[in-house]
Image (cartoon, rainbow, N blue to C red; front, side, top):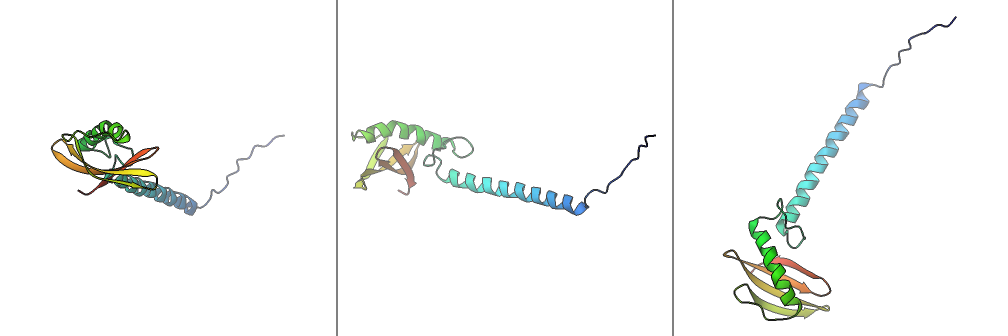
Amino acid sequence: MKRWVLVLTERGSDREGKRRRIAAMFIVLCGLVGSWAVGSVLASDPIGYGVPIWPFADRLDRAENALLGQVVPVVRDNLPLNPAVAEVLRKTDAYGSEFWTLKLKVDGETRCREVAVSLNITSRRVSC
């Protein structure tokens, strides 16, 4: 005759569950701090890092990116710039690249960028 017996096993102690919850909370906290740190770096110069989008860039940053899109072909072809849009403060040749320091007039505000012209065009915000 078959006899069915209910076998109860003791699960692991509650200490393992606490460790898992603490580890999960630690991972979530590290993710939040890391995303805040990356966001603050990207927000410091969103155009230079290539992310002129909403959480990092404001209205003026997006306008500056559009203006820089108009200026870059002129800089690449080494043509004179429209003084109403941008002013060349300094030109430098170094390391096989050409560096232009530009003073851009963006929606009533003045911003300065250093544009490196080589195979790729990169820029960074500098103080005027």
